[in-house]
Image (cartoon, rainbow, N blue to C red; front, side):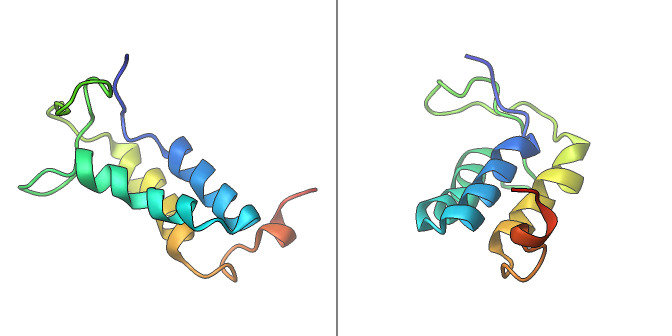
Length: 92
């Protein structure tokens, strides 16, 4: 299987699912996998080469969109629902 490049779509999906359904597991999963598998001890976060490998192996790079997009959705996931209320900004 391919690796993960720390793309924002996964966290965006967790953010939307948590806001719509209010299920705590989406909130819990929001940061756990990234912290467990992608965090680099020296600082930063790295791409996982193969998500099926255990233990996971990290690639020696952090994509620039991780800081601008992925962390944005993590912020929104953990922020109050008053920040960007989905019922006011999304069409039903």
